[in-house]
Length: 462
Image (cartoon, rainbow, N blue to C red):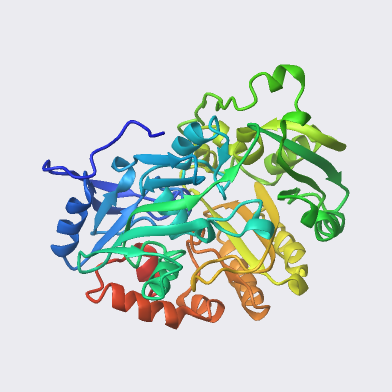
């Protein structure tokens, strides 16, 4: 099964234009020369002729900070290369890097498959999923996206097309450097990854309101291993840190009612209303965040077991509003996401309190548990707790608090997620990614001319 194919070799010239690019947080745009390649040949030619500002691949722009932008560089819009093929017998997809999870789900769910890992949005490309080594609600069971990739083709800094595999001793180090490497080891052209077989397109979900943060975390420690998927929403304003814990798995046919089981693999996404084109700064404040959190908490069932939900509502609720990042106003927002070992779980509460102290309560706060890390030197997940907090940018008191929290995260053996980061320092990165030197040595081998760079790469001296 394939989508409408795109050319993977073509004599036509790629389209080019200058464009102001930013991450999903809309905080630090920069202008680049954007080209839409029609083939791997187009990419190779541009790399070989790269100027001093270098080149970078970009997908759908869902990294929150400055990872998918590079001022003055040639930036590949990879979404023009989006064909993919489903191998039903092998249970795999082979996709060009610009194919989105959204496109892939529309083809594979009706065929009885699901992606091995999905982030909180389905508008992520395969190349982006690998470069950021995305994680989801099932990391404690199945790890991050890169762990399910069996091979990929990557164009290195000399313009050579490499075939990389985790099982090949000659290329495994380059494979794992590219997983989580934020696009700085080469341009991913295509990849093959394993799928999860499913019986239906519905989810069987257990939901419970938790009275405080201790209740949330205790239940997750004691019960997450019984579920494939688990996530907790935390009320960032309530003094108790109350939350809603949602856990589940893909529903079986036996769990559906008669009407649902007649069409068990139907898959449809809701139409997408747009957020307002202009939202004034200050609209998201303590009062409005408190009102939102109260409504979100009250709409959740107090204690429901085996509720049937659709895939979009369970995995991608924010995708129900197009361009929802506009609600933070023209100054944008940042997401502060860290992971710390279990013993440093106290940092979850400390972070929420410190954000409230400076009038920057998180509009959307998500807590998950991670399983063991994979072999990728720059992959973010490691065993422990991960908290993601969205806060509006432009608060003058926010920076010092985040620096303070950085220090605590580093001292406890944690780290920040590069795909969400927009402000950490090179020193923080070096302290928290102990295999950074190993990764840089592999990058230098794959990119001897230093062709691949980004605003994030320059900021962090990657």
